[in-house]
Length: 275
Length: 292
Image 1 (cartoon, rainbow over the protein chains, first blue to last red):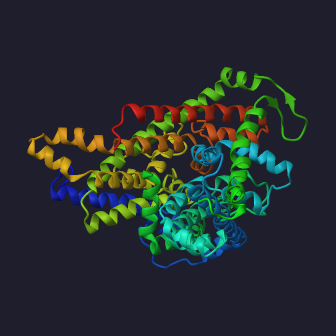
Image 2 (cartoon, each protein chain N blue to C red):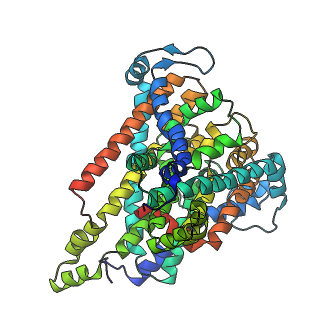
C-alpha cells in the first residue's frame, strides 16, 4: 500500500511466487537428490526427479576419498581462531576509538576505515611473498592473523560502545575499576548483540573462505574444507553423486546455523548493506 | 576525563596497537610492496631484476591483458545490471509482509551464505552439457542443448547467472529495508496532490532509495571485479580464455607462470580502477543523490 507498485493480478502473483521458489530451491534439491542417487541414476537421461533407495555410501565415499576430517579440523581451527583473535584485537581497539581522545586518533581510525575500502583479493600476491619469506606459508597463523583486525568489526563495535551511557563509566571509574574490568563488566555485556552478530558474520565468512586458503598455501597441511571439496571434484568429478554428497557436508553446518539464527543473520547482513 | 590513571596517556595507544599493526602489515604495507614488485622481473626463486615500467608496457601492448580487462568489464556490466534490475523487481514484489513473501525472502537470501565452492559445484552439475538438468529441460521444450560452460559465447554469461542467483536475494533484502524506511507521509502528501503512480514511483520511491541503490551498485561493481571462485572451479578461464578475468589472470600469472612483476602490475592497474570507481562514487553521492 505504502509504495507504488502495479499489483499484478492474484493469479500472476501466485505464478511468480511459485517460479521464485523453484528458482531458489531447485539447485539445492538437485544437489540433495544427486547425493542420494547411484551413478547409473545420475547419468540416466531423462533424469529421475525422485530416488527409490537412498545411497548413503556416497557420503562414506566422499568422506574417505579426501581426508575429510583433516580439512574439517583445519576449517574449525581457523574459524574458531579467527573469532577468538577478533575478540582479543577488535574489542580493545573499538573501545579506545569509542571512548578515548588521543593524538592521532582520527588518522589511526582513518587507517581502519581505509582498509574497509580495499578489496583484500587485490593484494594476495605481496602477502604471499611476505609469508614465503618469513616461513609462514602453510601455517594456521597465515590464515588467521590477517583477518582478526577486521575494519568492519571495529567500526560496528565502536558504534555500539559509543552508545553506552557515560554515567556507567564514571561510576565504575569512581570505584577505581581497571580499564580491563570496565571492558569486561560494562562494555562487553552492553555489546552482546553486536558481538554475536560479528561472530555469526565471521563464522560464515571464514567457514566459506576459499580464495585465501587457496592462494596462501602450497600444501594440504592447513587447507580448509571448501578446498577439500574442490579436490573431491578434481578426483571424483565423473561421479557427481559423490561430489554432491561432499558438497552437502560442506553446506549443512552453515544451513544449521542459518536455521537457528536466521533472523539475526538477516539483520546482520542488512546492517552491512545499509550502514 | 582528566582524573584518570596516570597510564591513561599510553593506554589508548596500547589498546589500538594490535589492530593498527595488523592492518598496517596486511593492508597498507602490501599495497606499497605490490607497487614495488610491479617494477621488477621475478620468478619467486631467482634474483629480482629491476625492470622499470616494462611490466606495464607489456600489459598495455599485449592483447592478453586487454582481452582479460574486456572480459571483466563485460562480466561486470551484465552482473551488476542483472542483479540490480532483478533485485529491484524482487524487492517490489516482496514488499507486502505476508508469510509467503517472508518465506521467499529467506529462501532467496540463502544462497548468499553458502560458500561459492558449493554454489559453483551445484551449478556446474546443473550446467553439464550431457547430463545436466538444464539441457534436459531444454530438450523437453524441444530446444537444442547449450554448452553452458563449454561454448565460448555462453560461458561468461553462465557465470553471471550463477553470481546473480547467489546475490540477488541479498540485494533485494537491502532494497526492501530501504523501501520500508521511506516515511509514509510522503505518500500521503502525494496522494493529496493526486500524483500519478508513475511520478510517485520516480519522484518518491526511487529518489528516496537512491543512496541505497548507489551503494549496492558500488559494492556489486567492486565485487564483480574480483570474481574468481566460480571461474577457478567451473571454467578455469576457458573455453579459449572466454572467462579469463583480472583476478583469475593475476592468480595464473603468479602461481602458474611465476611472473610476480607482471602479476603485480596487473594488480596495481586493477587497484587503480577500483580506486577511481570509489572516488567517483563519493563524488557522485555528494552531488546527485538525494541523501536524508
